[in-house]
Amino acid sequence: MKKWKLRLAVGLMLLLPVALISTTTSAQAASKAATTAKAKPKKQYLIIMGHGAGDPGARGNGTNEATFLRKNLLPQLKKYSKEVKNSQITFYNPKHNIVKDTLVHHKGSYKINKHTTVIMFHLDAPNGKGGHVIIHKKHPTKRDKRLAKVIKKYVGLNRAYRGGYSFRTNLRNCNVLRKRGIDYSLVEMGFITNKSNYKHLKKNMAKIAKADIEAITNEKIK
Image 1 (cartoon, rainbow, N blue to C red):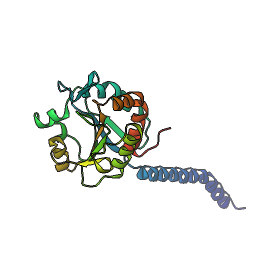
Image 2: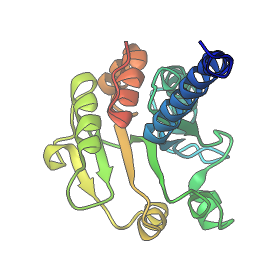
Image 3: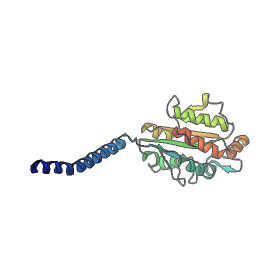
Image 4: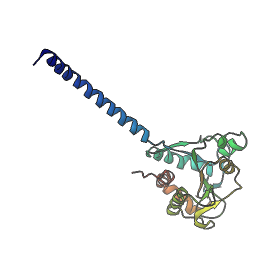
């Protein structure tokens, strides 16, 4: 073999590994870029405990709405909120009252990102039994329906509301959310004044919180 052909062959052999490495690196970079592009942004949720900051809300069975929600429900919701994979859940400062923050200080609901879904928890009074979901449109969303199923399973639905849903336009804080185009559900968990409702809420709080997080996010928690 002539010397120049030998040199050419050797040169090509030396360049081959470099070409292979370059091709592999490019393929890996392309694959990573494709994976990143496919990753969907997490759905944003804001969970709020009703009343507080000096406003006790409804009273019954030796406690009040603000205290009961923050002491019993909030810790369980926070626990299970860490178990979902495709949703980002944050909690409104429990030391605050969002209605007061919104209507008095022009903050609260005025400062919530429009791409966030808001879930508010309350307890009903004075007379009655069962819970329901106050919805932001005339017809319940799939999320509203899932939340109503949780109420029905653990406490029972309030028969005063067909299907367990109520569409209201006289709640000023909710009106701010609606006018800003923010999706929300307000969950009336049951009557704090009803002994049976109160007993079922206390007994099943962990199960209720887990089911509520699943209902809100439409994700299954093991």
